[in-house]
Image (tube, one colour):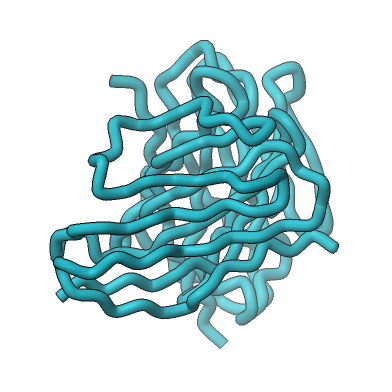
Length: 112
Length: 111
């Protein structure tokens, strides 16, 4: 079936460096994508979203890029901090915005 | 207030017990969700309520019974669960079809 997946299950980054977390999706009909951050013992926290009529969106220290041609989504975190250590999930809407399907997740480890 | 609250934080129950998980939001969101998350896995959608009516049931076993008493509250009634049902149960809410905001979850252990 349709799925959302990630290339790297674990990413280790030096504090202060930029992080890039990638996600591939297969449902070409998806038109809304979200990145969530989940810290240990907590629920997913919304970071940033993007709709399919855009290819880039920026937030505070984060940027999401969407390449619909190759069905690829990425999350860039600038000047990565220890507090950024968490599991990051990309998610897509399917069957309407209420039905969100999560990718497998990438664990980001920030090395002090 | 952008908070979704869930109680209890932890729950241990036997396979013959009946228990309930509770979720509350005061953001005026009209859609509420239950997800199940196993360790090191992504959340999996279980149920969606829209305007207090069940709109999506992802073929969840009947031992899980959702209830939406009003637009701010969402319950998940549990009965005759199996050990494999042990997981983190997450509640979320959204304004119609907008971004979903998650609660901290209830860590459920079935003995």
